[in-house]
Image (cartoon, rainbow, N blue to C red; front, side, top):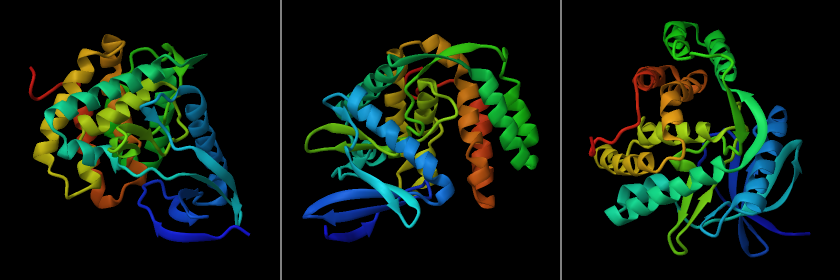
Length: 291
């Protein structure tokens, strides 16, 4: 029988349990479903991570290898290799200018990687967004007026785009940087209501423009981070694949991204999120340094 020792529980925001385990002298990370009803979503997340590992990762943009999977007391789990690194938020906070440019280039490379992974499946983008907004509205009746403002950004319900690979929750927290080997690792893949890389871009801007990291980590130096994320934003925009098309959709995508948080937020957190939604409705990703 293989011996296992739980070393500690790692922090996460999905509600799933994440454990650091020593197994046969090797450190591994185990992610366990939060409920039997969530098992199917966990399987989809594992499959998405494995697809990226086998088909999309590069030498410097990777994901932890899935080592094992199964069920524990009716809950699906999967084990993956442990990556000794820091979150992208922490790396940006301490990064110098040269490192910030390097980070920006890697994000651009990642966006292009996703953009070029077309699946040839047609998506009616605005229809999916409208459906999601209506679902949120049913749960958040006191936000109806704000949600209606987001809906006004939809011009053509029948607009079509071609699906691509989508991480599903590409926040800065879900990018780990291995400083020793200078490798970027994607973690916490999530099933997505829109399989398109624009959703991942809007998730990145949730941090870069909406400063979501400050909501999660109160110890972050927000003044320093705003300047540094502005440099990254400016660099990304200059080399964006389909900049004009994305920028046209940006207010809709970013406001919807923040709106999706409302049903899961505590009452005292909702005013902050609503302010970000208002900001996003009128937003255009821009740098505070380079006008």
